[in-house]
Image: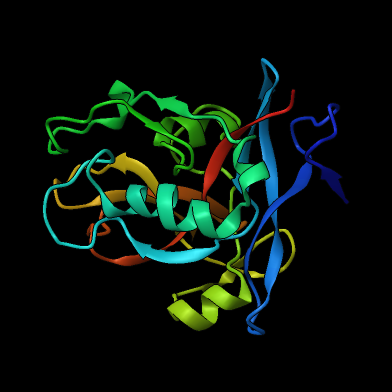
Length: 225
């Protein structure tokens, strides 16, 4: 059951509707569903329930951090303007994103400055905080499905054996964190843990090149006041 984003009693774990984006193969705009990850100080952190589009971290191959990448520009311009009307935009908080030390690997871009964004991808630290039960980088549970529109548009690879809680094939998705390779960025993907139970777990993949097309789950902070 979805909850109105204007409901002051929105709480962590709720699913809310906010904005519209193409999600089916009918050229219509549909309400976007969001998972509420956090609620504090009159704000809520939202993460799209499904992967909504299919983008490169950066349009050109090379060494790029979050501040420089074309994915950040797309989220804060094309996506922002397509998904939200003027009244909805007023509710979206301009957030300062601190690029934590644990997001920087030995071979990652040497400069990874903090940014201010309305829409963003979650960082490695944020994903561990909100999805990992024990604070570990590996073997937690966060599979996500793509929309019909994305599957048709992007022809993205799906993990047909690694299903979401709704029984849909899962897809990988971008984080904003750098990888240990200066020409790559971290993504979230799903694997079998290889044990007797063959349980499906979620891990960080550090190898995707910045110019690969990979699904995107937008995130944003929204004012509840």
